[in-house]
Image 1 (cartoon, rainbow, N blue to C red):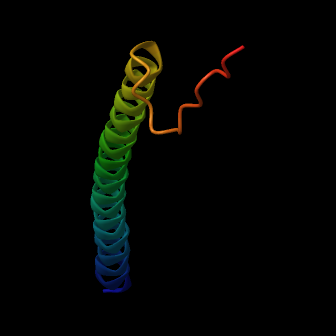
Image 2: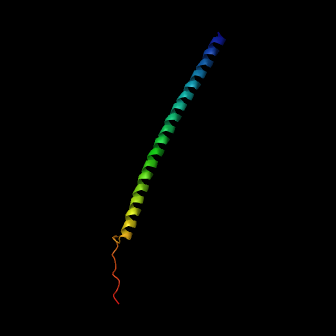
Image 3: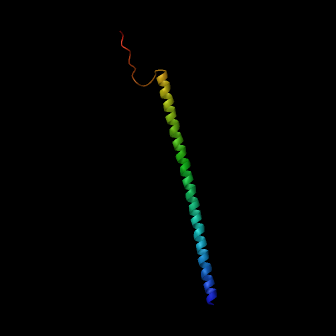
Length: 79
């Protein structure tokens, strides 16, 4: 009788340990997926900001080349 009770106790502990391990794996998988999504979102936002910066630089270069920049252009004094 003791062996039967002990066998059930051991089986219960094994099942509990296995269930916890499975739950931990699921939680870890969910956390890794969330981290991956955060990385993708951050990368996308960074790429958008870099693109905006590149467009601003291009516009500034074009303004300087064509002398249409936003700064007040000073006339050269006549001699």
